[in-house]
Image (tube, rainbow, N blue to C red):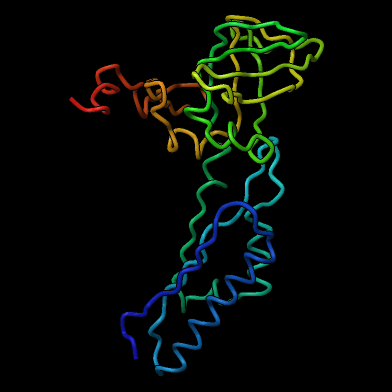
Length: 237
């Protein structure tokens, strides 16, 4: 009765859903499409968008795989693999997060009241979720010396702070890492999503440059670092 209804969309966020819940949502969407088609007597609904939802963990290891998801879908929703439907997915975080890292330099190290606080060039301006919800959005860190060599040695509890004028500007607190010194470099892992796209203009810090890299470590610029003029233009004439 409604010819405009030609597709069904499951709106699923990328974190917080178990695999069986994702499969159940896809099954419900396919069943609804079949119900509509039966009611109108033709294949009117031919597109089913099963959304994203496959989560990413930020401890360096992924618990869920596309293969496991496909096995569950094939077992419980075989129609998504048939030619009768065009199936759309919206995998974002699970595709891009682990493909990206953030490299930042250690500007200084503060040692105060038994604390070791490494101050780096990136902070809550690019890691909003980590700064405000650190237990939900932690990251793995690697420390390299000024020559680019991976640091080892005894692990020391340290804080990693950003450069903003904001007391909550921390990327990590009491994280166990080799002793960090000024001039070192820190790699923040699993940052290919929900970082630059959420960039804040607080303190008017230019947004970072982005590079792609290949197996031979050849770099391709995707986005140049923002210039001072571009930052000023953001605030108007």
